[in-house]
Length: 606
Ligand code: AGP
Image 1 (cartoon, helix red, strand yellow):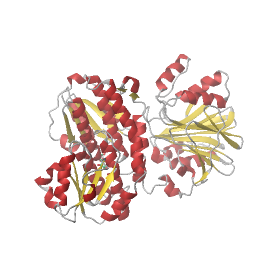
Image 2 (cartoon, rainbow, N blue to C red):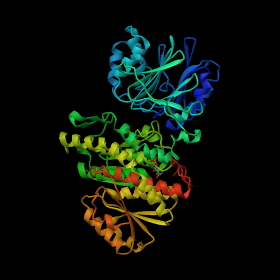
Image 3 (cartoon, protein in one colour):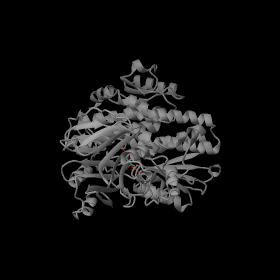
Image 4 (tube, rainbow, N blue to C red):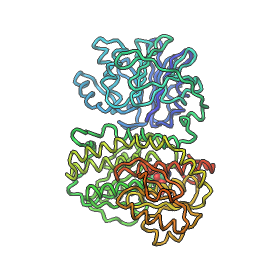
């Protein structure tokens, strides 16, 4: 996810753009760039690093002008570097872009055949080349941009200028971009916070909209060339609130970003007509020779591994061993060169997980990392890497990274199942259809959160919680317990529900809330037995299920129902209310939700 800003007005653009870009740094911060138009010349400055590093580049006074674009990057294609930073310039056209151009490889080939030379590893660079290609065929600037946008598959939010004309064009498809309407000045931005100090009047562009800023005016059209009308909204946000998009905390914002985060993680992976999931960028070993798959991580990422284990063993019938990275590296694991070692890490910088990767490499094992930060150590040094496109996760408590990690495991499982002949085309198509419904199903949950806020008020004073679940929902409740303890500081323990009689049942009384995940799956009856055991000891239960007619529903304290889906994907839907309950309790207790005491976003030391 990147941050884009643009300005066209009466004031000097440079400082306005840099200040706005600083407020978008949470969207991405591995490189930044700016382009300022003045008297038919465009000055471009780019720098690896943060916006403050870019300031040094533009301090030479060459960036005067009242129209410009700026960009802070969160790399998806092409490692963080100056050459891959935006804006991308081709001849007199400059472009900033947020999104993923799915068909950039084909477009690059076509353009190369026309004699175009590429200077970066990014998907974005095809955009200015395409515009130039249309300009060379006699199209005017606006038409050249419109035709270019029509050729792009995937997602884009773009800002475009060219030296010959004092025109700025903005457009969006599946990536956010808004227009700020000021007093004789216009803005474009990835979200309102960036420019809220200059205007609170915004047009929220819709997919395929284009905004053209020419002279002192702006007009809207779409990529079919039709005129478009959009309402100007007034947003009542403070600057501080705005950086979080109106949410009180980054964690809450990131919980609500999960539908988009999963959609972007899925983007470009499916060839449904062939029943394929595409991970062609991986040079996986011959799967038929793989005797064991290891999944190793820390914290939330470890819980994702435990869910991945259930997916892989159920469908691939290959033994999977999961381990906490800090344990794995000290137990001299028995690795064979035909094993695959999967390392999961949001930050890509967790010391124990990096050490686990090195252990695997020392033993000649194929290492595959699942990361959320391009250019991170695990992303760079593993033999293969799959990125979760969750966008930067600022809240210390991991939320959207977790659900996108599970999504990656699911897609990787389908990819391997195809290669191993464990699933036929129809089965894979059905599975693809299921995961594509998940973002909407999460949104359904997010649209009905008031019962969870009520639950938080009822249980916020409790000093201990027990979380129980079976099968794939044991790691689900482990994740729910971790969320609660790390942001509210309330003790919360997760247990496999079948273990109740082996000790934890001694804890049960009317003071101990028991959170139970009990979907209508193969362990349903057994978990109902656990619920009976808790009720028999005056325990208080909060039930999460996909079954609106759960036989225990009218005997427990509270029930929260999530939409149905297949076994492998239900953890994604069940964890969302668990994340929210933890958030609302912590928020009521007034803890520092985004930066809880004693914690860090990335544990880069042992
Ligand atoms: C999760 O909410 C915690 N912040 C923590 O357990 C985290 O998952 C763990 O430190 C692993 O981090 P990583 O995914 O960046 O490797």
